[in-house]
Length: 500
Figure 1 (cartoon, rainbow, N blue to C red):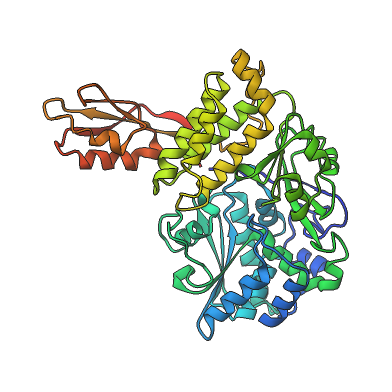
Figure 2: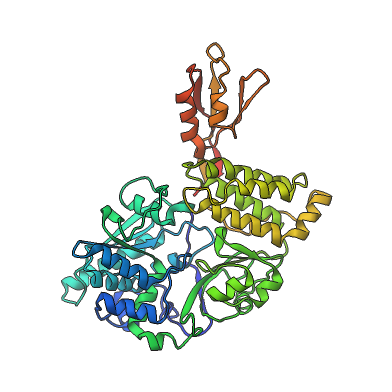
């Protein structure tokens, strides 16, 4: 699991999403109403019109127009029930903004979700977040505060609100995986694209958006489009939340108006770009120090710089860690986060990670890494292979000079300090495949099913490498499909691994 501490909050410009947080660690319901007032219910057309007027986009990474999504759910529902789903399952290790909102300003998120639910006449609001975290406790307390206020006679909405705690891993925030998990299924992408607006929670039309998106909707309804657009750029009005991590002396969630220079954000967080700045998280792209200094915080500004704003993740590397080693370390983690349901991800991503590790050791080549990447691009059952490919290819371009040093000397001389955050280590067993040689007939099927962990000798008989816990499902499949019934799977001594 990824531990989400309550981060520091910094502002450049007016406080909107973070209003009131300078006075308290958490805005309970009375404090929230003092800062933001009581929301006025609106119909679907009104909300769609306001969202379209300021070109409000989703803040989870895809930047889909919110008004279009809201209208799609309304049209799909017709006279049927619908559901509003808040995606607070922040599986990205480098992001803290959604956890900050759920922890410190939970009622702003709920105001936006309830506004949408009332407009749609939805059956319920569902808030999905990582189980066992402070954010889950805070949003649960916020729901109870609203229930108590309603009992006391306050004008609270009649829409039921349900909090669902989910086991967190990197792909837990993907839309299809989230809907599956809320529906009680395994929290993995469904393989075939399925629009939540058509069929989501319990098969009903579902408005699925990110935590910050609902908070932005509440602000838009509170301020109105004209006042909302008083800050930011004319094409992308408002503020955004950034998670600043990496080598920054002040790891924080920063609220900034669009149009702010990234250099100013780095400066206020006392962050040295060093060899590069990762923007958009572990499915994002690297900016060179020169590009980072001139980049503008907006969708258009980041695109011009060669990156995507995504979910607002900014990770400067600094100068004391090996950039290539950091990239290889994250790629190995991303490979371990495969759900194993498609070959390009299950087989291809470990090969990409191996080739990148060889590059850091001075024995590989960029051509080999690029060939491995081509085996996964645009071939996966979800976005994970493509996002990982983007991260790796961007690293090859940005760290070209460091790659040359590794090629010539085997190392750049700097250690890998773990500047890019990863989940805390958990104890998980490894497994080994044992073979009954009196039965084995050298069919070789096990090597086809587990090519990463089984090698065949010149006579077609297998030898095995240790199987990590995240591949145990595939290992059991190889055992079950052995034609000679010669394989067994045994647990080894538990070891410490990184998992999501």
